Image (cartoon, rainbow, N blue to C red):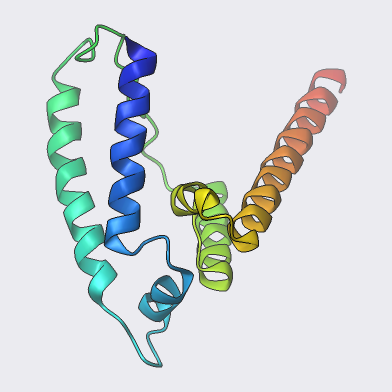
Length: 144
């Protein structure tokens, strides 16, 4: 049942990204181009997502189990640290350069265009490099 619900939610999310224009790199870059020909339409998409998220997180915070019976595991971090800031800057720079972020890039893979595939492969390579560096760092701390 959980796999079926994950599939349904993923499909709804992907369709929402496509309908809202979040999978169109030109539209995303137009939204991020504050000094040029700015396209504010994605601000409404993001605003809607934030509102839904606020309601969903408030509802979820009051529960011990999800609607499907799984244990609730909400984020617990509250500090803004160097890693968060640097990660946010890297995410924003990548989004601005490519016009894709992870969700829309994955939804765009079905188009057959090479750009989302290149982005997704670069994303996986970057995540793998991060995990490798984390593993090396943890191993060196254990051996010190």
